[in-house]
Length: 225
Length: 225
DNA sequence: AATTTAATGTGTTGTAAGTACATATTTGTA
DNA sequence: TACAAATATGTACTTACAACACATTAAATT
Image 1 (tube, rainbow over the protein chains, first blue to last red):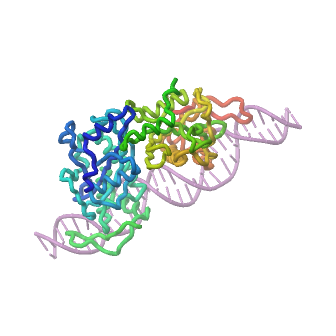
Image 2: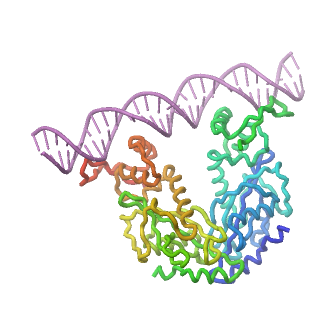
Image 3: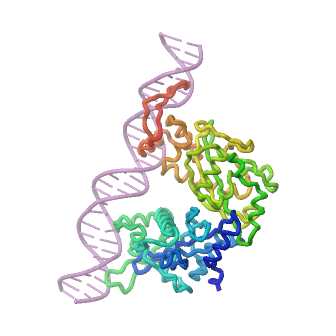
């Protein structure tokens, strides 16, 4: 149902040549997830001839009767079935030749979702999770968009408690630290990390322990509401 | 000459109704300046009937054959005659009803210029400098755009040496501090301020003094290249 | 020539945060 | 019962930040 609303490339071409002053506007969502100790991003295979086999972000043209922000939520909902998700505008990319079929400027948003917790309804079988560090070339300027969003995320995770969107309800500090390390791409000192997190007052001690781990279990926490 | 290229509002209306899928794209420049101990912004009076007498930012529609960033430079050049100026993209505003004549999304940029140093060629006599703190209501959603850009500027001036674009070639630390205070809207301790600036290694001691001041002259500095 | 005015230039001390680093504890497993 | 693996915790050192006071300089005034 939702899929029907996503425009085909041929239509973009037609639209963007209707008038000399006609510029198409799209949104692209960089959807980050974390699973299996890996920091991932949700991508699809491009349906353009020019970019056969290349990966691209999830996006769509903005409709004339919807807000720019709403368009990004619609794309996210259409592609993942998810509804109540944090989305943040990052940057607008507007180079003349960024799209081979015509003039399309795009506004990039990023989002963080918990891969296991939400049951994703991925209807399109060309949509898959990819390890962020493995991404090399992408369709369009999407690699640049991905890099920009990743940098924005890195700048924000130490200042704002956005990261908890990626975690299960209950989590250990170990898991939280591993996630920070995966996103930032560095190793952190455990003692200093815990001190810093506790100082920020972002988590609540649940007074529960991990179970079924082959080592001393850690305490569980949840994100402070 | 340049003025000729700026579109009239009537044209926006025509363009944006050509096609259901047609969304116009514009840029708006928030041009900050500093003069006479006042932190200012360059604005014009709106030429729309709906916003008679209200102030608006300097903007224009993006042309199909120019990059989004280029459009912001073009607007700045057309309005001020300035050529080599720092411009930074801040945010894109895309609410459906933000423009009364049709669907227009706009990308906001901010810029910092030295009012005295550059000889502005302001051709349009409806364009004037306004004290930032005096701005109340504006046309469109331009007050929100202005506030967003001001907040972005405030977040950046302590981290990046952008502020020197507002100052003359040679300046005293007193002037620099007054500028920080004007932008941030707070009083700063002189000793701590100087320590912080020196630590950042942003300025070079010119070994010259102020002249013709009715008190002990201060040392002059320039921004490190 | 002496005094006043107004701003410059500098240093110390306490507090908070950041970094580096080592040992004892708990659980499951061999 | 010993081992493996990860948890939990504290201290010393360094660096940044905030509060705060006094001597110095040049021009203007008496």
